[in-house]
Each structure stands twice: as structure tokens, then as C-alpha cells.
Amino acid sequence: MGEIFDFSPIFESFDRVWAGFQSTIQLSVASAILSLVLGTILVAMRVAPIPLLRAAGTIYVNAVRNTPLTLVLLFSSLAISDTLHIVVSDVPRTNYYWFGVFGLSAYTACFVCEVLRSGINTVPLGQAEAARSIGLTFAQSLRIIILPQAFRTVIAPLGSVFIAMIKNTTVVIVASYAEAAAIMKDLFEDYSASLGIFIGFAIGFMVLTLPTGYFFGWLAKRLAVAR
Image (cartoon, rainbow, N blue to C red; front, side):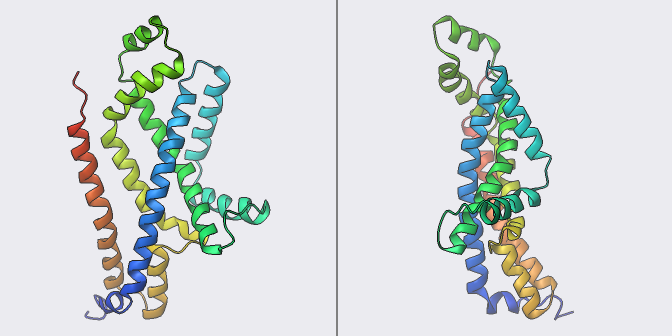
């Protein structure tokens, strides 16, 4: 029983474990920022008055969010890098990192888009009509009036999306980027699988996700839109 719950591999390889979680944090932060930008662009396309933009946004969101994340990441690392020979850096690890970020962001942006679209639906239609009546263009009314309210409405759901994204970083191993899940796999191979290693890494991810959830919950209450 003591061997099953042996936490010594975590402490003996703490430097590797810490480096793995640092990689996870870097991956999560970059992917969160990029997915938020891309998701905002997608939601603007989905509510645009131009049919072609709406169609393009709808096709992208429905296609990517219904594709397994593993395939999206494989496309980033194999199709773009190995087949098209597009590289970001001459350093392999940096290259794999950015393709992991691109794949994770492209996938997460679809859910960010849908969350923001639900927030836009909560903005009274009269405000958009009032914006048009004073001469604001679609882009101006979206940027100045609609999106700020939509963001404030969906802060909590966005937090859930980003928490799911942090957990989804464990799949980035298929893009050849070593983060926390890859280090856990290495420890399983070096020390044999044990509940101690698993519980240690589970606690590590809880340390990342629980404060994130509390932060977005606090922010949602702080910036709640009064109706």
C-alpha cells in the first residue's frame, strides 16, 4: 500500500515537475490571450450583417469545435510544420510550443465565440438600434456598445472555458511539446505508475484551476451588469 501511494518520485524529480507546470502555465496564458482575440473576431463575423462573413464564421466554429482536439493539434504540428514546412523558430522546443498554442487557441476560440454570442444576445436590441440611429457603423456599435456589455455578462462562463483549456493542455503532448502531462508520463516510465504520482499532478492542476475559477467568479460579481 505504501508503494502505491508513494510520493517520493514527485519530490525526487521536483525540478522536472516544476518545469512541466511552468510549461503548462506558459501554454495556458498564451492560448487564453490568443483564443480570446480569435474568439472575439469570430463572434464579430457570426453577427455581422454580411452573409459571407456570417457563413465563414459559422462554418469555422461548427467544424473546429466538433473536431477532436487531438486532431487539431496534430494538424498544427504535422500538417503545418512537417508538411507545409512553416516554422516559427529554429529552436525545436519553441517551434512545438507555438504550434501547440496555435492548435489549442484555434480550438478554444470556438467556445469563446459561442459564449460571447450568448452574451451579445443579452444586450437589448434597442441599444443596437439606438447606435445605428446616431450614425454609428456596425463595427463601432459592436466595439463601443455591444461587446463591452457582452463581456461583462459572460465573465463566469469564460472562466469555465479557460479552466477547460488549462486541463486540455494535457493533450498538447501529441504536438511534441512537453508540459506537465508529458513529465507525468515520464515519471510513470521511470518509477512505474503509482497513485502518488497521479495524485501529485492532480493537486498541481487543482492549484492552477481553482484560483482561476475563484478569480473569474469574483470578477463576474464585481463587473455584473445591472438590468
